[in-house]
Image 1: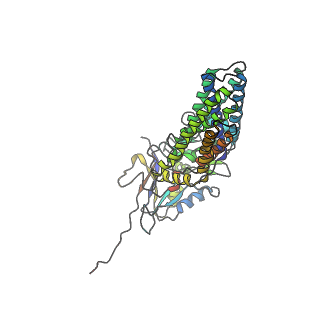
Image 2: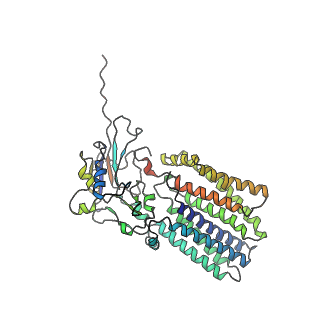
Image 3: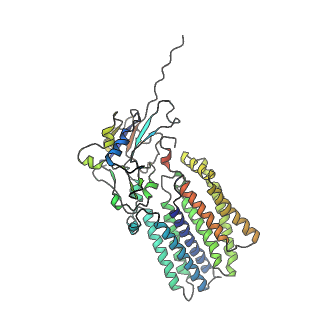
Length: 266
Length: 189
């Protein structure tokens, strides 16, 4: 197993959580039933705090945090530089939203900020899909990150949404949970029929308690609870967050690098 | 195409003595656990014999290096004169992106400096018309410096079994594959 990369686990999950909150909020603003500025600002404030916590966590990943600003130097080819830029743009739009949505909602700004969030996820997806990890050298990181954003955004958003929009958010969450459950169960099975490194990755994932913890605690159990209760309880967000953290730790620690099998079959 | 230096790894000659790896270590005195050149034994599924065969590998100084493309602070550059990929450690912020991205595991983390580092092809020695230490030290001439652009590649392979195939990166390395030992049996009368 590789390192768990906890700073990166926290950074990616929290950042995607903030993007999910804004995206689901933007959807509510566009669809109409939830237009109360105070709730919107509260939700954006929460998204901002979550994002800043994630950014602080990301600093601990660097050997030399003082050089953090220079991470923007290679926008031409490095997706990590683009990730840093898009996160900065998203944060700036988030701050603008907090300033501009004092009196009334602003669906245009909300959609623009959500679109910037999608660019952040795209940059992250490209950053974490290098050729050295054949199992994830594809669209999967982007898909995983989008699912994290939707799961955490639609569950945490329940804390801020009014009564009218909660059933809609529960439907979004339920649909995302089903899609995520199918994807996370199928993907390792597909890897098993791939090349040697993909197969090793599948074996690592399937043998890891983090994988099954993520499936049961983070996906299956929330689905059962929503079905049983007929709504999304506020505390469910904590369960989903725990599942996402486990899943992301596995993503970094359990995905096999090509160099581990040098001299063997690929 | 401009000059592109690379390593010729003659696995047919290599005896796995690790002198190349030791010479590298002796030249640069890397921190404990930090290794730029490794000698990998071929697994039996590739080389099915009790005699072992080896690949001596370090940075492959790729034509399109993943490390250089993903580095957010431009700590890597490719020399115009010979295509050697150089890591400027003073620019490195220790994000580890190059370490994660190189399919050959060439960049490694220096836990003391908290920065990445990798094989430099001994470019300072090259500039002084000297060979890299690994090449110079090999007792059986199993590693040599080659110019990929002027190489007669007859009998050589770029993506040998047991070496990740990454054509997009175009690693500047060529292998001669190990021959299986000839089995001599007494004829039955």
